[in-house]
Amino acid sequence: MNQPFTHPYLPNTAPDVKQAMLDATGAASVAEFYADVPDELRLSRPLDLPAPFPAEQDLARHVRGLLAKNRSTEDRLSFLGHGTYQHYVPAVVDEVINRSEFLTAYAGEPYEDHGRFQALFQYQSLMAELLAMDVVNVPTYDGYQATATGLAMAGRITGRRRVLVASDVLPAKYSKVADFVRVHLDLEHVPTVNGTADAAAIAARLGADVAAVWFETPSATGAVETALRAISDLAHEAGAIVVVGTDPIGYGVLTPPAEQGADIVTGDIQSLGLHQWYGGAHGGFIAVADDPTFIMEMPSRLFGLATTDVPGEVGFGDVAYERTSFAQREEGKEWVGTAAALWGIAAGVYLALMGPQGMADLGELLLARPRYAQQRLAAIPGVVLADGALHLREFTVNVAGAGLTAEGVVEALRREGIEPGVVVGEHTLLVCVTELTSQADIDRLAASLAGLATAADASTTPVTTATILEEQNALVSDAVLPLAPELTQEQNA
Image (cartoon, rainbow, N blue to C red; front, side):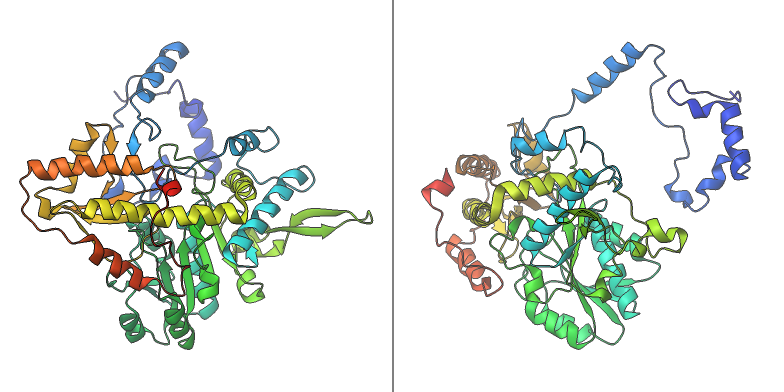
């Protein structure tokens, strides 16, 4: 039992190799490397893994069996979102990023990878145009890290600690951001009203110690923030920086946060040409204006144009490289890796293919189709919308009045080949509708949910669709372009 174990898949588990590594680092045991991990997060038992397979073909068969248990959202009717989304990925995106000169997560170096530098420069340029910002970074790991970095930048710039969280944030994102900034910043969530920021409550909490006001738009429930300009003005008067976490998929039709007072815009590019892939290929972006105060606080790599010794020729390389942890090493303000560079190229190809008109058409669909879904679901007796905000792509419904639970809905409809959404409360379901969701798909969801409600003998009178739409339309202001009054037949198809 106490004999040293050498795992056949892990060469570094051999006792002599492990001891050599410990000697080189000066550690007495492997446990020293995990001293900072709290006891409650440690596994106090061995991993529940099968015995090692001595033959490679047996291991391959075992893994294939495990993978066969997966069910893709391409195989089922899916209304799943909550941070990872099912958007259409043009075939040319996969073709380009699978080319050998691009197929690595690493960003490359100028003496060997001018092509990758140029592709990422073009991605940055397209993102800057979409977001109405001047400077966009080479992708960092994911949108969670990007938003955390944006808040850390605000803390360093202002020298303050307090951050007002103005929107409903994905729980996983809030947890990650809070962990990332906990040494330097204190997060204070301000409850929302009807799905969006409470301007009066934020104004009451602003003070000389507030480093940033953090918005998420769309929020965790898909609500679009329509008071961003007014609250941004209040934040700036108090000397605070406005940091917005967002998904760029809607900015062919929505007014970008930069044009509503945002100083730092962050988010994830998974929606731009990246598959869901059982959890998603994620990459984070940080966008700022052409202001050294902000640019020099960005820890990420930036690629720009540079002149060469050959007249008329330009190259592509790092901009203000001295900012980065690559240059400063342990003296850097924040460590940044290059694990998402390939996804930046994918997003660049996607944006180049879509163009301004394509992004505008897509944005209209992502507003119109969810509204149609809201109409259909809210017409079911006992099913009501959780708020009256304007929603992009996602919204929540409460099924308590229909005598149902969210878990019960998921379990029942899953047997019909439908993933109806993500459970976010005992009676609350988050429903996601994208351009891949047809009117027939929405009607099928509504019919199945109505069947469950009928079986539960619900007696609650539903909120009328007219009331819901009246509340939604009242929220449409200068922050967004006007919606078409009704879905066209083409949009319904």
